[in-house]
Length: 173
Image (cartoon, rainbow, N blue to C red; front, side, top):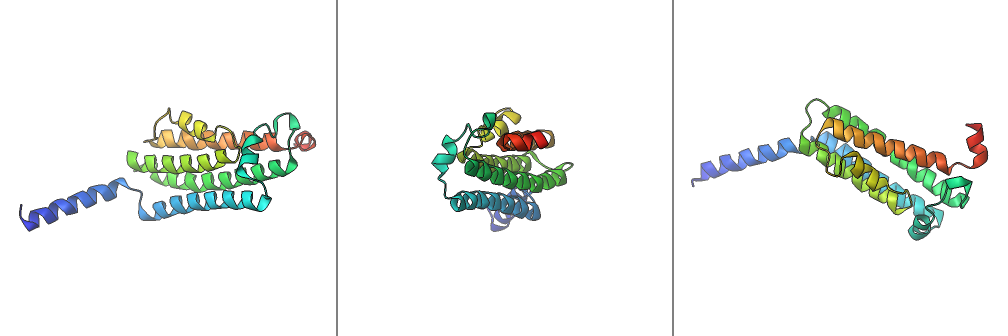
């Protein structure tokens, strides 16, 4: 095969590959948001003086208003980080609404799943399962599917956050 044909084929393959990935500005936004969320979760746990194991074992925290207030505070902070992450991701999802490809939505799905996994490690029960169930057990490849994943995880975090509030605070709400 001639050098010019190889160059043309290579150029076409690069073009095809680049079309399937997130645009540079969204890729930066999505990955920066993800890394920021995971780093903040680690920082919150570290600053609390608690271990990930103690947080995971505290998965009853919040149900029937029992549990260590320090653990509750950590979980609420982590949920707030998750909510901020999801807000940032929502902007990317909306930007891809009309012209996004299956691979682009899949890339966002895996990013959301990664952050959900970080949240689950500190005791936010079934965060990854929520993401997977919202996508019917496979990576989201459409706007509707990734939007559903986003909404279900956000709703999950809001329910857990409400459970973390002490009884007297719930009465005031």
